[in-house]
Image (cartoon, rainbow, N blue to C red; front, side, top):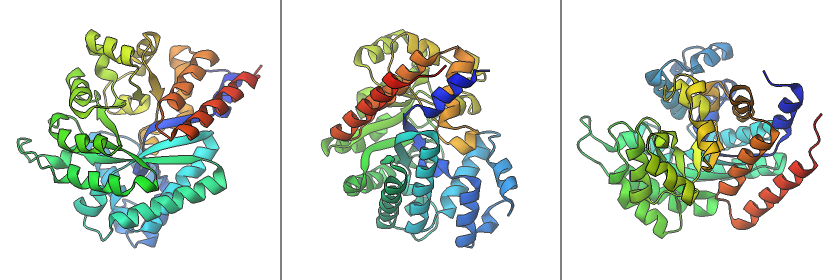
Length: 357
C-alpha cells in the first residue's frame, strides 16, 4: 500500500513513455467498436465488452499472441488507425503522459494478415489521429516501426528472410515526415537473434533513423550485446537480463544507454515470476539509465500510473527516486531537440513547485 499523497503525486506527475505498442493500447470498448464497424465480430470470442476484457487478461504467451494478432486483424482502414491513435491520446491525457513513442508493426498489417491496407493508409491514419490528439489533449506521439522478428525465420529457425525487415525499413523511411523516428525489432527473441538484421539497421542509421530493438527479455545478455554491437542500438527495449553480465552492466552504465523496462509485462511473460525478484531497483541503484513503461497495458492489466505505483509499493521508492526515474524518460526520448528540451523544462518546473502533504 502507498499513501494517498504519493498516489496523487504519481498521478499528477508529467510522464513520458518510450516502450508501448500502439496495437497493444486498444481497450476492449474500442476493439468492439472496430469489430462492429468492419463486420468482424466473428473474430472475437464474444460480443460483450466484459467478456473481451476477460479475454484480454494475460494467461500465457500463446494466448497473448492470439489476442495481439486478432487485434491486428480487426484494424482495417486508415480511419481505424486514426481512431486508435486518438484514443491513445485520451488515455495519455488521463494519466498525464505528455509524450509517447509508440511501436507499430506495419508489415503485419500489409503482408502477414490477409487484408487490403497499404502503408499510405497506415501513415495517413496515424497522422490524422496524432494531430487530433495533439489539438484536443495537448499530447505528443512519435512512432517506431517494428520488425516482428518471428516472421523472418523459417519453421526450423535456420533460414533468414530479409523481406520483412527491408519492407519495414522502407515504410519507416516513408514515414519520417509523419512522426516515424526509428526502426524497432520485436517479437520472441528465442531462436531469432539480432545479428541477421544488421543490413536493415545499418541502412536505417545511414538515413537518420534511430535503432530501437527489443533485447534481453526472453534471451540473456548475448541478445543485448548483439543489439548494441551489430544493430548500433540507441536504446534497449526491456534489457533487464543485463543483470546477468557484470561487464555488460558496466558498459551500459558508462554509456548511459537507456533501458525500456516493463515490470508487469516481465512478470506476465515469466521473465521474472515475482516482481520482488525483478532487478529494476538494483539496475537503478547501480546508476543505469532505467525508464518505466507498460508494453501492452490492457493486455497486462496495467497502466503507466500503476507501473510507477509499483516502484513505491514493491521497492519502497519515494517521490525523489520516482521523479528521477520519470525524468529519465524525458532525457532518453528521441523527439526533436526543441520539443525534448521543452518537455524536460516543463517536468522540472512541475517538480520544483510540487507540494504534497
